[in-house]
Length: 505
Image 1 (tube, rainbow, N blue to C red):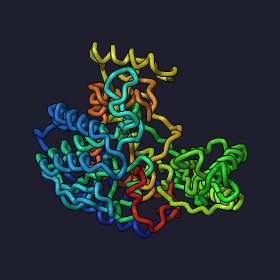
Image 2 (cartoon, helix red, strand yellow):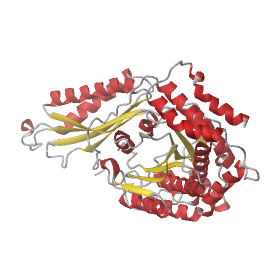
Image 3 (cartoon, helix red, strand yellow):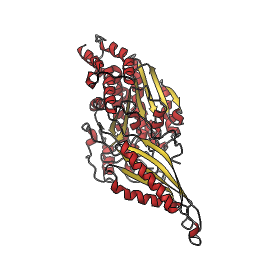
Image 4 (cartoon, rainbow, N blue to C red):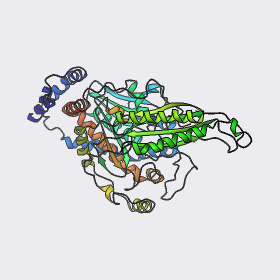
């Protein structure tokens, strides 16, 4: 009883150092207060099961269906559908959730493959997030040597087939636990497409789909088992389209104005700019259209840019310089320029309280143990890799709680600025394997990937259980969230544009 009362004493909010808190935070506390008080004064149930027993039930519920979820992941791995084109992948996940008793809302936020599946009612509202898009150009068989299934075809180089299936496994296990224990509250699964550059979650946030969520739980495939308190890189991306005048490149070059010259001039200026931007910034591009024949002056060319930085304000300044380079390139080559914003995501706002809660559960679940066949596969994959920072065998371990930031970006960042969020990473790839590589695709198509996926599913399920059973966790996570965010007002950087459903076409 004493422990429960100390949890509820947090409601005085003195830990924040504020005499008064107003607005949305107080409204949220008011909604959570009845549940918090009820649980705080709930007496122990004589003869009831210990907390570890319910944890065991959740873990065993996932373990009992490991074959089902491994098959779901393998099917999505085979579909290998890129952003906003994940019709089969999305439908498969929806089908499993609907069969488990979730109510599914399809095509949310003007995105045909986005969906929200819900179970229960009332507060708290806990969200589990799943992704399922593949990457172009990474087709690969599940073998430890480079062997595309389809030359230049797509492949799951970031493991999102495992991401979606593992999150579904966690959601179904939590739902079954809620039903058998008559737990109140709302559990939601968010099917979020086009994370790879399409900013799917940003459109879902903009549509208000996370407005009443108390905590969002996610995970990501990796070459290790860990939880981070670090952040990611904010990211802006756009396609720059130059238009010129076509002409015969040999007999009448003076009558042409090359759109490709515009692209190359822009790229040259941006590359010179690299010396004069912060060292932790990243700028990269691909020329997606450069003309059709050398003897025809291209009247259309396109280049696709990403720019990143840990601070969105710094990124804004870098992005404005890139726009100036594009305008200058068009002026100098006598072409015209237009650009289409494809995506823009914030850096992740970390939440240390939630990270430590999830880390505790990851430690309880443990790492991945390879069979003899998996060990042989892993050793063969290691021969195809540059030297990594983790040795083979580290997949069995839980890495220390990480406070450093990553070099990647994620649309989970936008979610984290509107609701407290937490993410775990699990060893679905052989240690040392980088994301967005054929080696990651190969690992993700084997039982190595499935084993790591189950580590994540169990960890997320246990974390969700903690949030439903102890309202103090949500209150403390929210307090840290409000403290870190300060007076920041979230505004999506995609403006009012509709989702770029054709950005991969």
